Length: 520
Figure 1 (cartoon, rainbow, N blue to C red):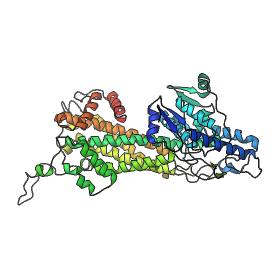
Figure 2: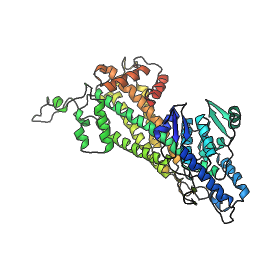
Figure 3: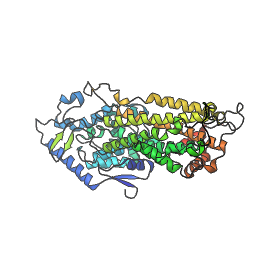
Figure 4: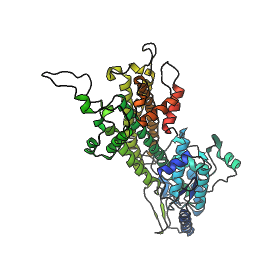
């Protein structure tokens, strides 16, 4: 990166790169000289082959129809019209617009894929798409339409529609007809060359772009859930052996070991954890059975933080690697192989790698959400915790209701995510005249995972308020670790303690946004 600019070469785009471009409105993309050279060579080779006008030349999507109509051979004079018709016929998405951040991510990924130089597109097309990204001209892309095989055809067609000067786009917070916006900004619509329409829409860039942002959010969710887990251990003065290094080294899953290590770090300055030997040595066994006044092991939502969040962490690492590979891959068809002087027909556009990875990550984030909801219930339910007032009511239980209403939101939101947890990529329905007989449903898988992420931040927001309310009840802020005390203060700066019943929903939304952005 140079001066707020990400250089795309088709090989080295990272998830942090994509997030940086989304977060910083003044950031830009540029195509590396080597990638520009490869694109030019690819475009020239394609043009030279087409220019030979051989009667026996058959290249899918260049001088043939698409899908089941690939058996229809076109005349040389129809090749450019074919590409425009492809865009117009496939820009038929319906429903609410996809979040503009997700669309921008998809545009960045598509540009990087085309920059690899295997798609036959010209440097001029790369330049035009770069201009849209840099000016933050974001196409309006409906959410319904993609089956994730032959790529994200419908959604990418809506992006391509804006490239050729049609459709609608978001610019500086307002929606414009693209023709009007291009005139306003003195931009000329791009005229497609042979294969360029197919190259724009034939790939996994929408699901991969959304997936890259999901991975970024998932990292923040795991970080937040771990810190809240540490705070919950302090609140119950948990036994320290549940996070001991020796315990977790004896079951050395990478994620479990990582989360346990992180918990030990978070709690290293805490004054609240209990030493098991010191605390239990006061109790003596007798001649008969007797009941101890306190539990000698915490419930699983407290004792098994590393064992439950560990798999989520491991699944995220695998998903990040799958997405990294995908955004730096050639995912269209056919591939223009300049070195071999041929065209490779295949199925790199099939989205199962991304769909399967996001489905697994989605399910793990649902588990993280359930985990958080159970801790909320623990601290609000007097019958279970035996320590706190009902619903952490800090004034007059019965007259005031404390956090009772918040639990309904946590419960319903968690249930909502549980319904979304089923893997979507196995919902394959044959389509396209049975040409696409096994599809990935990757983009819908990504959109569903994105909804699970949104829900998780809602539930963790409620857990954050719940734990802070418990800190206020116990008056233990001074005994918290440095890290948990810092989080407590940040949360309280947005949502003060709930003593009198008051309208909370504006503060809830502000805290959700703050937690998602890590208060940045």
